[in-house]
Length: 347
Image 1 (cartoon, rainbow, N blue to C red):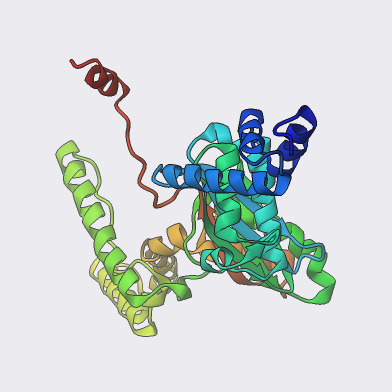
Image 2: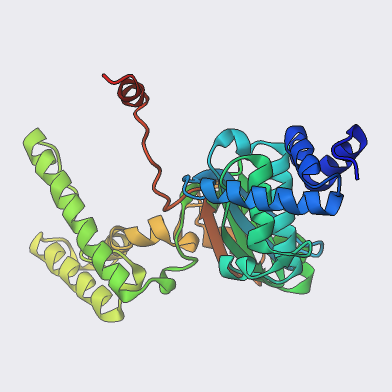
């Protein structure tokens, strides 16, 4: 059989996605046999992919797919080595395809994705072939899915993705979907770690309590030096710590202080009511930074996210929340280009 001909090269390129010179070489090596040439390219591609696998892939894109009736959403993070490749049409098509594959096959984590079969191939082989074609190491690092009465999501510039699921009355589904998109935008910006302060672990709250106090004490040292008013040091940081006993003890201490100041008995109750509100605010700072429902809503800073949800419809209750941030947790190698050039020049 003849080797590489223009017609065979064109056919092999369309089937493999490989470059023209690679296709020509494969056809010549395989006497023009398309199937053998595809095998040749695949084996060569796997070799190339293996060499690239040590390269750090910290760029890429986050993709979300919401199904037609807003009851299921899937989010993936696929990483590349460079932002340039992350904007490449081939890479974008690949990531969209992976997300659709994950949703269609009910894949909810990266392990499940790696163990799946896509387009007749095991997923690692499929991805390695894409690495050979695109020319950079690629990593399908994260997969997550949420389901609910209503779900929605938001991706900010491919760098941050948020999915939310909620339960609600049937009559509220449409406005819930719209609200979830807005709340997802809020979460993309404000970085909550949980839906509610009730989701915090006791160890996390204890650790953060100590950290908050240490930070304020450090700030107060500087304020003393500058002769400025000191910040209040809270006893607690989350509403989950504010037991009835803790609140009662705070109220009693406030009353004692007001009596010692000679305040009239008849106004002490109203003063304590205002002071206890400020005390609760001072002692729930962790909730406002980390719990979605307790955060000030970016779309309307006169209310919290929880208040905004209830204002939309009292039947809405958030049930799932997932947030991805591109490259989070990946250690990127810092390159000193000048030093590298100098080293190559023997200086």
